[in-house]
Image 1 (cartoon, rainbow, N blue to C red):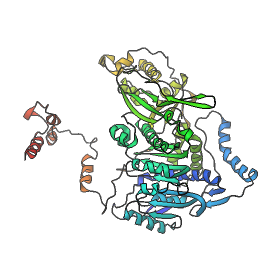
Image 2: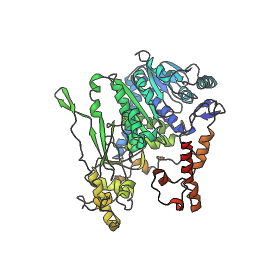
Image 3: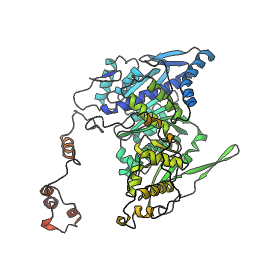
Image 4: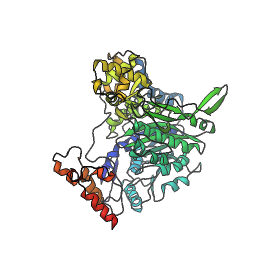
Length: 583
């Protein structure tokens, strides 16, 4: 039995049902988001939710400390709302508590429930729910869900289901059968379920989607990403935010087929996965804006400069909007900074990926009730960074990559990416998706000018640079902007000043994605042997050249090895393979 949140979950001894304890942060965050979503939705239905330990709600301070009154207004806002509801509204509210069935409440579907842990936690920790359907295609998982529901005394709210998740959602496309909240946390890609999900969620309903196939979405297999999400991923330093924008693009494209559109509430890149929370609405007029919300991406393979090209454009003509194809491309055949070629990626979602007002409500609820979740400190840190991000600036640069491109020392974050850009008149922020990210509205040319100014006081040995290298071509140009690296008082963001948990250390050994559950349980011996073979391979380099004889010669495979018997790598394995093929 495992304890998480308010739930006590029974598990089989073998690996017959999937469970990953590291994703407790994912489940805690989802409970917090659905709670605030329920608070908004049920207030319109005359229902007020009661969360244990949440007496004095305080909306957390805004991202930048511009003045004291702004923070005071932010903290007093919920009190004013509550006073307005009690005095001005003069409306009787029905109260909804956790663990109780609310007839005017939300209908929730967890399409891929496994053990049912997430659904049991919804029933025990999220008030204002009418019903929860915990579905899984596995018969053993469905039986375990029913068992856990009974064990936690939530069978009156939670029903187990053993069906194909897509069919459950396709059969709920009718307006009266739709779910208010649909949560999909699959093993791998959610792409097979997205079409059904955007149809089965109610008007203004909430979709919660997890993607763990980050290798595909981060550029290791662009063609696979295109087949699943309709977007070409590329290898880049901003790959984690790009992955968020790829899944949002895919959701909006599939929703548009049914005259629906999405409004992202919160999108986070955490550990080895990404998680998005989007509201789905219907409107033919708004769907026409879809083309202008998506963009192609041009990425320089040399210096990493990138440009976005919107798929369409819209112009206001009085009371009407005129839509047309966008003009482009925004770049030439070669990069203007290092003269290297461009890669073409996308389309990706180019609009904001968060609703700051909603995020601040979630952040205020979590910070005001810190004992509700075990990962409250990390939730507060991540959401604080989200509120500080520039909403209208897609993607980011990475400070380490900028300095390594020209082979110079990396400047301090506050001195370079914050102060220098602010002195130059541009906006800048950090990103929750990468520790050393520089998210700014400054063009790439300004960043390279700042790097050139920094290099003058931290010179590079230019005689060692190749004339065709990006470093030589960037540094050979004189800066047109004179940088000021004096640290500004407003350069340090609030989340950094308060030392919030923004990027935590690895929670445990082998903490990444777990093995897929299989019939009979356990993990294959082949997978265990592979893990042991590659465990710590970077920390244990080969020091004895005689050990190389146990490794096959890669040049021999290509037919380019000219060392013969003098080669330090083995040629025997290749010969045996050829003999086996001949047999």
